[in-house]
Image (cartoon, rainbow, N blue to C red):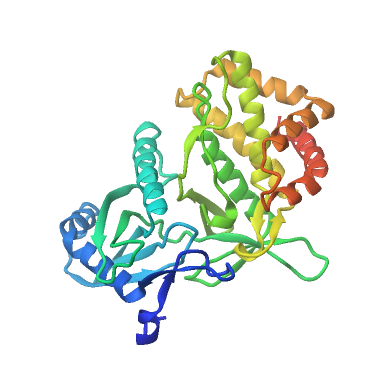
Length: 368
C-alpha cells in the first residue's frame, strides 16, 4: 500500500502496534521516509558498488523504500534497487530512541564479529551504520541511526496459528510474495532443525558464548519454502555472551554447559506468540526431535570446522544418550529455575515442562 497524505502525517509508534496505549515517537512517516531517501543518496556509491559486484551494470530505473513493520526497538525498512532486468534488496534497520540506538550499535558490532570469526551465510552481512538527521526532530531524537544490511530475498517470518477447533497449532509461513502458506509438520520440523543447527554452530564450547536471547515471536528467524524443502536464516543477534558462568573451562564444565544449552534450546524452540502477536503458545512434539538433530549435527559441523574438540563432542553424545529420565528432569529443573517467573512465557513453559521432558527423552533415544 502506498503512503497517502494521511499516513505520511501519522506518527511512528515506539512499541508494537498490538500494545494497548503505546506511545508514539512524535516522528512522522514523512520524516522517516525523507531521512531514508537522504541516507540512500548520501551512500549511493555504496549501493552501486554492491550491485556491480553482483555482476550487474544496467542503468538503475527506480528505488523503492518500503516500511516493513515496527518492533519493540527497531523500525526496519526495505530498500529495493531496480534495473530493467533485476532488483536488489537491502534492509535498513532504524533506531529512534537512545536505548534502541545503543542496541543497534551493539548489534552491528556483533554481526561484524560473527561474520569474521564464523564465516557462513546463516546471518546477513551488514554494510554500514550511520546517522541521518530528521526534518522533524522531537525531544526524544533529532536523528535516526540506520544499519544497512543484506536482505534475504524469498525468506519470510513464520508463526504458530490456531487451526480448526481441537486441532494442534499449525505453522504459517508469512509469504508476502506467493501468499501465506500452511506448513506441514515435516516442513515445520525442517525449520526447527535448521534454526537449532544455526544456533549450535555459533555456540562456543570454550568460552560458553552463544546467541541469546532470541524468540520466534520476534521474527528472529526467517524461512523460505521450495518444493517442500525449507531453508532458514537468523536475522537478529542481540547478544553473544555466556549464559552461564564457570570458574574454568574444564571438560566437565564444557559438558555441563552443553547439556544446559541443549535443554534451554529445546524449550525456547517451542515458544511463539499466536500469529506472532497474540498469547504465548507451545509448538507440537514434532519440534523436539528436529531440535535435537539440529544440535547434534551442529556440533558435528563445529568439529569439522575445528570449533569444537572431537573428544568433547563424543563424550557429550555418550552422556546425553545415557541420561535417565530422572537425570534429564534435574537438568531441565535447573534450566527452568534460571527463567524469570514473571515473564509471559513462564506459565506456558511450566505447564508443558513435564510432557516436554518425556518428549526430549524419547527423541534422544531415536537420534542418538
